[in-house]
Image (cartoon, rainbow, N blue to C red; front, side):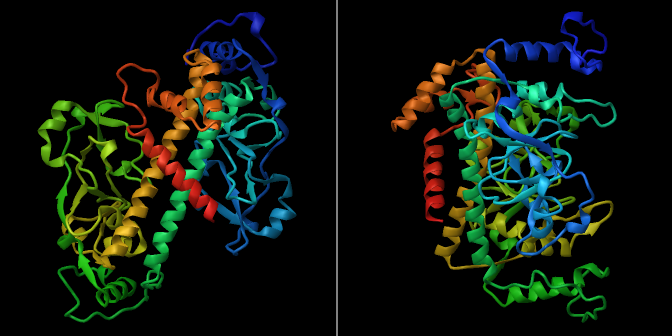
Length: 508
């Protein structure tokens, strides 16, 4: 952003705050309006701001409770429903009825992470929202998924943030939203772009279904993962090891281990080869370039996240022992002990220090990762952890974690489910990136409406060749960028996963 600039008086409106006239934002506005455009108010029937009153008294954990959506649970294109507070159905229908939401409503964060937008998914029959959120009740003729694709793309983000008012915590007023410029495109183009986001939603729902199915099998073992620890406990000398602090001997930990020992089980040390990651100097870090370096903060439950640091090819080649391999598992050893496994098309990657590397020998990596992320794994990792500022574990303590064993064919079936879930989450992320990039390419003139119309019409006739041609030109850097790595290493695998997700949805 420019600190000093001059503004032509011809573009002055009632806004006197300098941010509105930032040259880059003014140029972005001109770019959007250089082709056909409409005001946002032409796309929705009603709009509003979420609940502004105190809501704590309405919190509920009842089976019929309703998700209460705040700005912090809205990620780009998605709502993290697991992180939502929940309110009673009665308060949703009465005191908070003005901020009630339905599927296909568009939500946009107006304070904090301004501009992040999503559609209320079909799996959410009822929801409510807080005052950080603007909701739009869309017209039947408007595609909400196309709209959020624009709002989340680079030009849409700039256009929305231009509306922000205030200095300490900028926010967007509901009064400014109706005039937000939206690129006007044909219904075919809206559908083509919107379908990418719908497909991402479908893949996420399928991934969740697959994991739920896996958890149903593992939960049937009825291990004591919800037992509260006793306040007082006596421990026999035979139970004690070389730790004299009370933590490893708390009753809920000991109870879980005893119950696992009654089942067929193996310790991790007998199932994998264990090693620690590479001590890479910060002097060798490359920001947003090079071969990705996996650090603790990059290990997510669904995927690797925020991979913003890399290393050079030379550093990577010199660190042969620490190179990630297909189905290798990594476990963060400080803080939260999250686990994730690698898949071949995201390689190469290098594993950083204080990240454990587990190379599975006698168990599928997908299933072992899931066990480690479940309460059975997390409780055992925490049992022997040492706390200073944060929790710390070691390779030897990871190795002593006990894993219940199932019939081999069942383990393989569950591992296949988990692999498909991992791929589904990964491709869902790519599809939302596709939607944003397509809108950006249209605005910048790198792609024509006619190309997308042709692709959509061909898809409706059962021909995906035009769609495949477009997808093959997309990368994390944009559309048709020479030398860039394509988003999809295997478009056929994407189509296959979409077919399976659609079939699963039809069978529900």
